[in-house]
Length: 166
Image 1 (cartoon, rainbow, N blue to C red):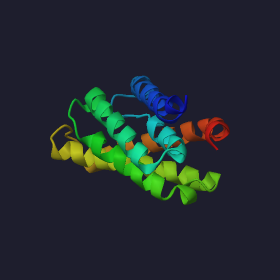
Image 2: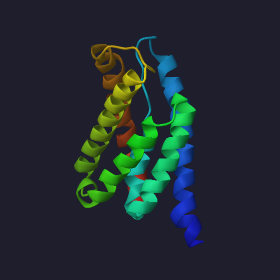
Image 3: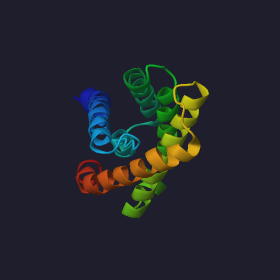
């Protein structure tokens, strides 16, 4: 039972959230004009809370596996999320006591996670020629709407996640 609760359940939760992210992002993108790209990052929000109860090694391995699946599902190129998600997990694990100290710090942590994940993904996608968009267009049409939507998602989910994980 401890194996299931400590390792398998968190992985399954992250995997399901990753799949929900894909469909929610698709739905949000279709609701708005063609040039606005709203991306859901519920996965990053859940990583913040799930990482509380995991060791650094477990967190790293789990996020590496989720990153590989994320890359295969979204980008069809292995490497972008497989690099970024474990790095985010390491930072979250290392500074967990500060990041999770109160609601304002958790809100700012989600904002920073989403911002850095989006910017790093954009930079790596441009380097590997997966994206052909100027940085100015990226800021206006992708990162700004994505930040707003994910912070709203966080505000809606925060009470539920606090009851489960804190």
